[in-house]
Structure formats: structure tokens, C-alpha cells
Image (cartoon, rainbow, N blue to C red; front, side):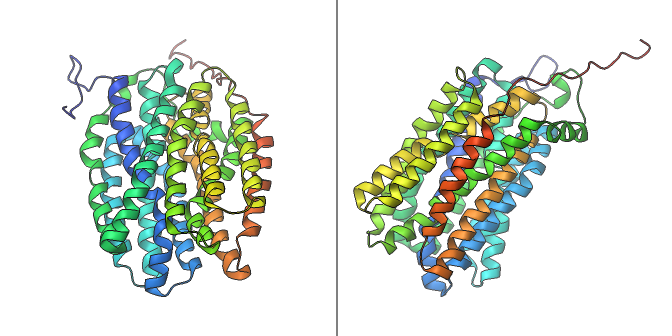
Length: 413
């Protein structure tokens, strides 16, 4: 299949087809999210080999999530203005370089710079905000939530596929060589990015807001602020569990294979959860979907920490949490597109995601910090439960009614 975009009679790239957007977008998200979901598998081998504390590793990944969030609005703005495919190309190269330098780092500072800062910036240009901007601009509104669910499900499939592969690579080739191999895999995003070349912004027609107008409008909107605040909790949950659960289970005396299976199950069930959330978003108010997801997360976590820790309790927890894992992503981004339109969707989605990544920073860093100070993850589990309840309440007042803008007066009118 050719990766060159079709052209219109004027020579400009034509609007992308639904199949093209989903095929290339899903493949990119599968790779980018699949690689990052297995980072928790490196915690023990790297800290053991380098003689670092868990907090050293956790802080680097906390910086990764924060860098991802901070650079997200910038990557989104560049994608909205100059084309998502260009941002994807740069993100692919940064991703590969960050993985290689992560393997070569011999100090905590160098590890934070590579695994943290560099990979974080790379992820901002290769994941949901950029891909969802392409979906928003090229998929009809009545299919948008569903299409976003498909893309999120692809990221879940990446976790299901890549976590066992990464575990096998570490076991067979060692943790450093495994990172070198993943660096090569990240470069596969380069040819896939060419399949998402869009028409230039001027080809979309209509009145265009400035970047400043779009940002001011969004942050003055109450529902945008609530949506952004609630997304903090999503980041806290998924990154704390994804990074620290392998070590938590080892502390409980379970074999490493249990953690690998659990992470894979999260990815497997998340395929159904994210796709289902996207489908449901076409029929049910999306704020209600988000509130239900956050509340159910708290219930599942509570049941997990109160029950005896066995392989089967872990698998049940992973399966239930997988259904809720990234199922917040399609309705959250669909609300942004529905309320504010698609012109600056990647940028506005990046701002919402910044809150998600601040939550990710807190989840992964507090996990390491409180473990080192208390010898247990118990306090963080209870924090996660409380935050889930708070997010359920925060999302209830969100409204998804499209914003009405005054029509600019014609010159001379």
C-alpha cells in the first residue's frame, strides 16, 4: 500500500479516508503505546544492575510523563498548523534515540534525561493527541467517538502484544539489548507517518481562530476545566499501576510471570473497554460514561487490596482494570472535539492531557517515594481509591454542548 497521500485536482493532498486514518493511526498508536506500557518490566533489572533505588527509576518515569504532558500542547499546536505527519516523524526519531540512551545511561541524571525527558517529548508527538487530531479533522462527527475508540483499542492491543514480547526480550537478550531492539521498532513509525499526510490548514476553509483565541476560549469554559481536572486521576491510576505493579506483586511473593500476564491482560481487556467506550459515547452522555469509569476503578482497586493476593486475584483485577484502563480516552477527546470543534483539537487535547500527565508524575513518583519511606505501597492504593471517587464527582457537571461563536462581520458590512 502506498503511503503517499492522494491529491485533489489542484495538487493539494485530499482529505484522508476513514480506512486510511484508522489503519495508519492505529498502527502508530500500537507501536508507541505498546513500547511504553512495558517500562515497568525494567524497574527491577535496571535498579539491581545499576545499584539504584526504586525512587531513582520511578522519578525518571515520572519526569517522562511530565515531559510528555508539558510538550503535548506544543506538539499538538505544531500538528494542527504544520501537519501531524511531520510531528510523527520527529517523534519517531526522538523515541528511538531515547530508548538507546536509556540503555546506555550509567547515572540517575543521565537516566532521567533519556528515559524521562527525551522519551517523554517523543511520546507527545507519537500518541493520542496527535492521532486524535487527524481523526477529528477527517472523520464525520457521527463516527468520531467510535473512531477514537478504535484508535484507543489499538493502543491497548499494543500493550497486549508488546508486554510479553518485551518480557521475552529482556529474558533472552538482557535489558540493555532489549532497549536497543525497541529503539529500532520505534523507527517503524517513520513510514507509517507518511500515510497521515493531510491537506494544508487553508484547505479546510472557514473562519480560523488564532491559537491565543482558542486557548482563552477553552480555559474560560467550565466544562473544559472540569474535564482537565478529572483527567489528572486517570494518569495517576494507570501509571502507578503500570510501573509499580510488577514490583508490588514480587514483594507479595508472586513469580515475575504473574506480573507479565497481568499487564498483558490489562492490555487485552482494554481493547474491549476502549472500543466499548467509543461506541457507548455515540449513544450515552459522555460525562456519565467518565463518572462511571472512575467510580468503578475505585471499587475494583478496593476489592483488590482487601482480597488475598493470589495469581487469580491478580488476573481478575487486571481484567477488570483493563476494561477501565484507557476507556476514558475516547469520551474525553470526543467531548473536546464536540464542544470546541476540530481546528485546534490536537493542541486542546494536549492541554487536557497535560493534567493527565501531572497525575502520572504524581502516581509513579509517589509510588517509589512512599515505598522507600514506608516499605509498602498501601498508602498509594488508598490515595488512588479516593481520587477515583473525586473524579467521578468532578465529571458529572461536564456539558458537551457545542460552543456557539459569534459570526465575524464581513468587511464593509
